[in-house]
Image (tube, rainbow, N blue to C red; front, side, top):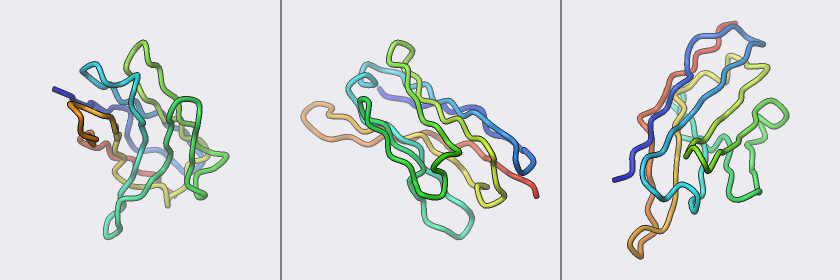
Length: 118
């Protein structure tokens, strides 16, 4: 069974930094595509950053401020967030996509709140 456990959210002032982590149980991590999404109140969930192999993708709103990384040996996905802005306030979700039993499966973490005060 695949489980995603997130940590690292919290309250920070504008201009500050936070680091989110997501630990993935099971054996799929090394062969999966992984990413971080966020959802602010009243808005749809949106992609923040994605990493697959050595390829990374970032939302325009976070380019140059956020860095996604993964450690396949530790089954961990991370998101380093710098120069945070109030508009970065949202619940952040870890996402893993992998082929499991012949089907493309999509897994989500429980979400971690990030609040940036002005």
